[in-house]
Image (tube, rainbow, N blue to C red; front, side):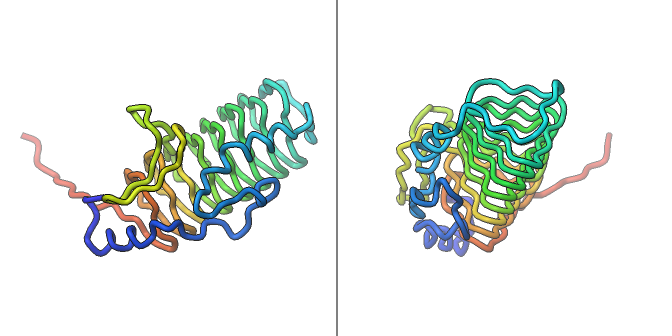
Length: 240
């Protein structure tokens, strides 16, 4: 992270032991949660949770305006699904969730109560804790969003390295091995991203942190209760 100031670089290095992320980890994941390896929830714990779903448990009225595909689909009471959404099983969608037009849930997702997945957002094998929101034009791949997370429009949680290699978290010579080829971001409770942020594979952001619009966040562990700022120069010249 050579682009960071010396002071902020020291803060990041001190945070390489992963800070607290979630005030509460809901069932069925609480017993499997390792606070120093939170990405492990996206492996066998998520597979087992979705595999334990009944073939179909739908507590809302179905409409021909949206599409359900596959097996093991659970949808809780009070959830609203807007026209043209596509939902593939296995998937667990809690109560009072809002899924807007153009959403694509690609399967392998666990969406907590009161969450929001907004227009033209794609979600793949991810966990939304209760109240997490991805409201507009986002991609969420192999990620965990804590309670109250809000993604600004156009936020991308990228999950795959260009070289296809294993995702690891780095800071100088420090490294945390994840043993995963696909891993997006893990965002603690209350994290906010500005519009058009891109989080590269393997970002862990502590609870309560805000990320400025347009930030390209490199893999690593970022401290809680912080502001991650983008500095740029804008030059305006006269037309000739």
